Length: 203
Image (cartoon, rainbow, N blue to C red; front, side):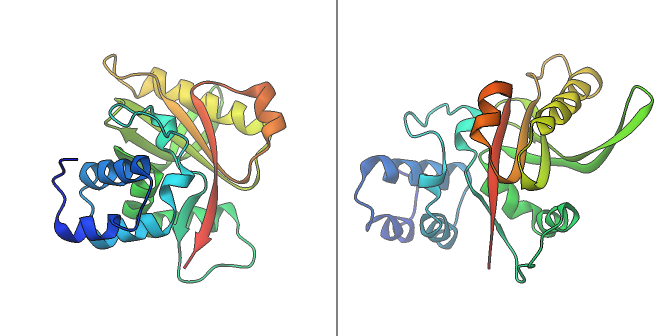
């Protein structure tokens, strides 16, 4: 299996037995230019087990490489986490968060002020995915996912499509990052452009 990785990278891959898992880590290491230490951390965090896409890796869909859970590193894990605190933890290490989120994500801003009708709102995070040529709205929820979260993020996606994205961009997608998913609710209010995932705090 030809690869551009160094011998140090190969050493990290040697303990792995499953060829599909090895292919994934080669793919992600080359795509994100990971050092062998960063690759070691990805393997240690069981990143492969946390992605939704485990077939062909040549042209993965944007949702399939969003991990579940998304691991957020912090020196001090608070006993009770508010949305504001979670927001700040992401901002404190935005580069690592983007890599953890998936392939091709670029930071476009946070607390983006928008106006829908007479009311002002703020988009938690706005990213752009270069692999899929689209904006990504990310809303964070410190608690369990709720039905109204879908309605909220869909409004923000529609706003971005109408006022921010260019004609040559694909339609905006949405990610809801929450403490706990609700599969029953998702079954009835799902949207193919909106994805949910959970977060996990770690040192």
